[in-house]
Length: 215
Image (cartoon, rainbow, N blue to C red; front, top):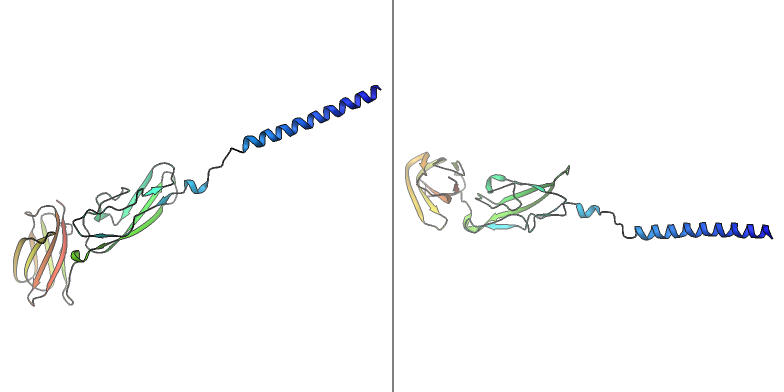
């Protein structure tokens, strides 16, 4: 009789231990149901450089998206190229200051602590009214661009005259060259902005150059 009681107690103890183990496993499993590992895609930096745009020299053009970057952890460092046509190339949304031709802009961005930068790009194209002209066989260069107090002209043909137009189409200055192939033009009287320099040559052809005064 004692032996039977001993065996019964032993079985009960074993059963109790097994039940405790099952309860522990079930409780632990429930506690982990709400534990989520961070997704690698949620911390992946994504960029939007914005869609292709047109630039007419009058309407403000801002690059980047709304937002330009998302999915990152911490601050993001931006770098736009080419930088010389932008007011702040380290901004997520820089503004175009001037543009001589159709231009591809490349955005490089890197989140804090990341080893590699992500890239995105867009094209900004000149509207038809803002394109420079240059007839075949005649070459003329204008330096510097952007300019401040003077502009130098160099041509492979005799220059007759120069007219400087504002973006609204108004003639703001006129100069005569008398057949010279290079000239130094004082631009101190011009205000900051974008201008078209139209050079007329001895053969009657014209070249139009778009330049920007910055100071």
